[in-house]
Image (tube, rainbow, N blue to C red):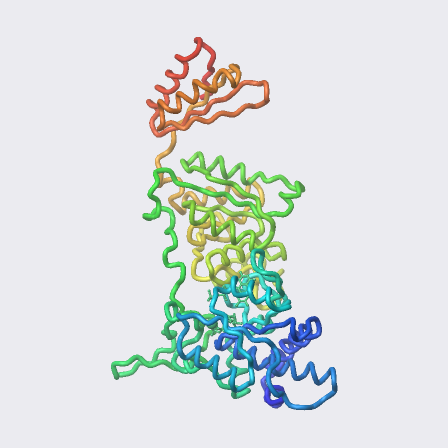
Length: 496
Ligand SMILES: Cc1cc2nc3c(=O)[nH]c(=O)nc-3n(C[C@H](O)[C@H](O)[C@H](O)COP(=O)(O)O)c2cc1C
Ligand SMILES: Nc1ncnc2c1ncn2[C@@H]1O[C@H](COP(=O)(O)OP(=O)(O)OP(=O)(O)O)[C@@H](O)[C@H]1O
Ligand SMILES: [Mg+2]
């Protein structure tokens, strides 16, 4: 088999290791599932081209082990699916069809979106596992492993990612060593290919040329693989801006507070940070719209962050920050913004000072931050900067004392406390029953629509506390007077 032979004969040790690991994953998958139960998701991109050849080799080696036959490969028996889109590059389409013909692939062309297409595919076929050319640097790889069940909300199948741990360099080493054909766009400066609407050649491969037409070097010459997606136009261009800019068109700033922790949900630990944050935010004039407690699960975090970041001016998230397996918060934030987690040298430097002697390996896992959207907020009182990803603030605090310090720095570093006018408030206590106060209070609400009226009790039969909040103290006083007038004198005690 020519691929196996080419790798066997090359002297790139790293490539051999990557190849062997990928072949191992493919062979395991082919042992776990029958050939009718697997599919290959092929789109003519470089990563899926690598996977095509690995699958050809893996299938050959798998068969060889089973039957000890040594025959060649005629045809490719793995069902291959291609989601064809009108916004794909013609070169990508042409290459996909060409490759199918060259390697005897029966292509299933799907002209629906991924989810609906997969639903229909799984309904009509007994497919249980799908091979994908996803690599760890891709935004969609966040939280995935070599075998990862499809996400909640997707039809059920196993995603098999044999080249998950391959780098950009590994991909090119493989394609060039095996001398296989790849899509012509990669020779014209394209380094990662999406649709015609969001992909341009990578400017880092631009060649200064005197002629008017810009020229580009081939993709394999990109020296820093981390910049593979520099030719992708940002999808989230319409993201809300940060606090202090023009994103707010409501008068009161809206906040959402998210805690991440299985232990809070099981009642093992008490969430005191949420309470403290709500108090602090309210004290500087913010309106907290929602607090939520989430499981230590990347998809739960990404879905909630995605929802809240588009509704609120600022999202505060804590818990699940660190190097443990359960520390998924930053991965969830990255996924919510559709970016990958990437090593951040500046952050790594801070961590090195802090925990250098405890670091193992050459990279610090904790130094991985959502790429391109992270701002580090330094403050001399903090040993590690605060992490701000657009309008999401990731707090590292684990108790109220640590939160106190982070909050102090945060308010100094951002416009959290200064960009909004403070709300005035007054609290009244009464031992009137709730039935007695209910109607007059509703009427008061109609008379004073600019005043927020809140009520709570300390016990079912105990006194009721009425909160009045607004921008103007005089208006609050008028509302208090109007309320008092509706009852006998002295039934309300001013709690300040
Ligand atoms: C075969 C296949 C399976 C997929 N399974 C999932 C999945 O389980 N969960 C998910 O969030 N996205 C899934 N996706 C979508 C991808 O994560 C990603 O959104 C898609 O490749 C589009 O990437 P792009 O937006 O960069 O074009 C799947 C895509 C394909 C082709
Ligand atoms: N339209 C599609 N049809 C079938 N599979 C797809 C499609 N789009 C993505 N995939 C699957 O998702 C994988 C990851 O896509 P991604 O765009 O990151 O890689 P690629 O297209 O192979 O290479 P490149 O990063 O250069 O674009 C692909 O390798 C393929 O398995
Ligand atoms: Mg692609």
